[in-house]
Image 1: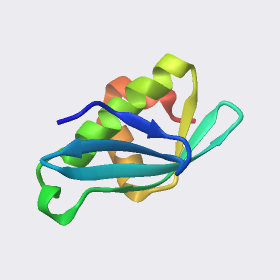
Image 2: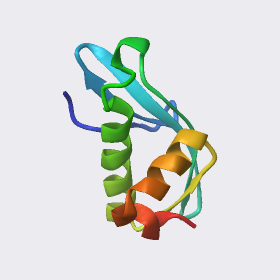
Image 3: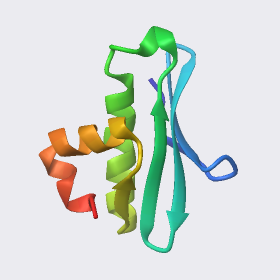
Length: 90
C-alpha cells in the first residue's frame, strides 16, 4: 500500500494497493472539501481499500483545517460510521 496522494491536477485523492489505484474525486471551495465520488477497482472492493483511502483523506483534511461535505453516498456513510472524523462534516 502506498501513501495518500493529492492529485490536484485531477482534483482527486489517490492511494495505490496491489498495483491498483483507489480514488476520491473532490472539489475544494474555500475551506470545504466536497467529496463527489469514491471508488476502488473491482479487485479491491470488499478489502477495505476505500475505507483506508477515506481515513487517510480525512486525516489530511483535518491537518489542513478544512471541513468535508460528502456528496458521495459511500463517503457520507463512512463518515457517519467513523466517529473520530465526524467533527469534519459540515
